[in-house]
Length: 377
Image (cartoon, rainbow, N blue to C red):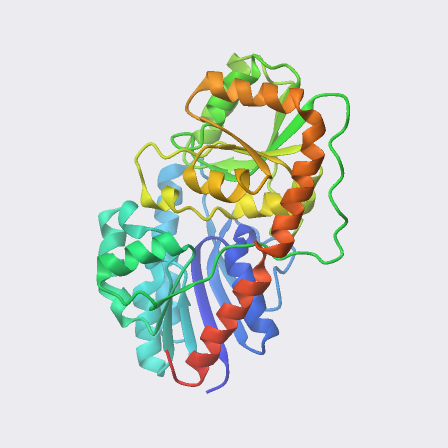
């Protein structure tokens, strides 16, 4: 059979960098790739995310939560049914929602079935955990995004330790990108947060409260809030009198994220782990690696993995993101040690180019697919 692959993902594909990277890498390697997914809004964006076929179904906006949830269920059912009639060599599911359609499609068309299991599904609900348990042993290949998550997954389902391929969510680097610019000597320090956030775990609300005490700081959000997080944060910013210092910007395309982040002074992430979740303890947050690739110093929470990768690596300051006093201390440290920020940005740039980039992960993906194409698994 021709080197064909079909992928499906329930996120907005136009802003899902992982799906785009994998699809583009496979297309460049000679695979004919078709991707099914969702999009925010009725209209398709007037652009193509890559050299692969893309079919997306619309979602209602997050402010209309019940209708959005209903559209997710309907869209997932439609895509799963479509998968049953698509002939491909490889069926690649990016989450549990499409496992049954991918598995049945692979059985019907004698293809290979891949489960890209980069979420800790049993922490997201019983149905998702049940779906994963039903299908993970039927997959010809299983992928995860971080070694700690893969180890826990293997133990939970009785898989061999080496049965899961680790493909981390590191960014594609632009070889022609200029080195990072230094933080300006004067004026406020401009923090930037990129990506999605949930105030239950990412305490941007406490960061805003800490900013009341440190006037030389601005916050720019190129982001969206899950559930009602954005609405709550907007109200809080108004109540705190920070509307001139906290700015909400539209999302940008995945290929524009790093250049956008690089236009600010310091990148920020206040992720916490109030529930002791495995997914956060062994997190592989793509926005953090994008911060490195943009050459930005980072202000982050003191999660173990953040400290290990970014603080110890010399690219970040860490604070207790559940404590307004400690966040304010970190902000004052940024102001007081402003001259260090250029060196930290240079270190971030170096880490991205020597370790945290897509090239090594792409090699693993293509090696896995070569085995699938040859009939292995």
